[in-house]
Length: 411
Image (cartoon, rainbow, N blue to C red):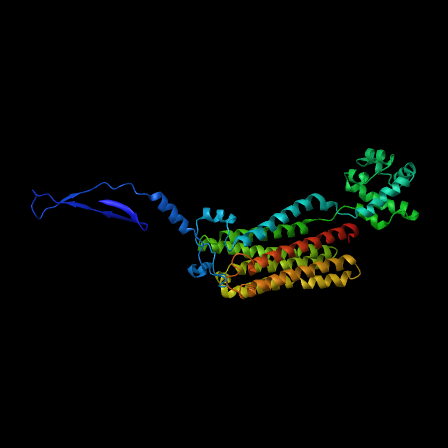
């Protein structure tokens, strides 16, 4: 019996031999050892065929989402092949990388913010202090400070302060060398009386020396942005593995979107109403509740069906529009403050970017006009991703304005 592979099937042939000395009705059956099959090449060919990209009509139901993207789908691949596919070309490649790159951008911004932004002050204005001290009688100034602040000799870093006051200050080294914001607070309360009468320095400039306000709302937003971008990238990479993995990944993706929208409200609400705890807590609690409710609603199995696509987009769009109330309230309270108008312009631009992205996502533009032409690049979900990253970065810029504003003016 000879065995071989024919069209990926093992076929065996039995050799039958007749012996003239045997009865006519008897036959001798001899098993012939088969040749070793050449399975290596066939196995590799089978794997190559198994992991090929497929078309939309070949997909299982749980992977059918956009009928205008006709090909280049991965379908029920093993996890190892899925992870390696991040470096190959398919219709999810740019969906993965647009938000993965966005994640690393915001990770870098978070590190930069943690290292630099706590020192947000008007550095150009504070440079005036250096110029004033260069021209001032430093011995007299030291005497006046000690007269104004009799408790200063008991404070830390006094010796360093005295030494620097005795010499010309070429830069802002005096400010950066003081390790205690407590000392700076006392100097702020004293220096306006000493210097403003001479028109050397503005009281507003001296406020830049005060202790920075809390940063947690800003870092909450950055954390929400990173969670959203990483969850989205992971979802687009892994969802083709199986129906169960797809279900989990989509819930993670929806939770990330809700987290980004909710935490985007934290900086504007907190820094606009930090002096009014009632409205601050009211707005923060409301948007947090909406975010949690949206995440819970997204856990329903029907939420991921293609026919609920517009409902998903409308839900997230409505959640974002709930921020109109605190923005209008901020403008009523601080219409005379240029920072309030500046941040509002950033927030309007952010809303436009998010809104246009949601409309493109729901309408499936442009692939609905030319099905199959945008399978690899340029389809609606990729455009949506780019607009989300742009909107989040716009909001980051608004957050920097909020920090600078409140650092300088306080309540």
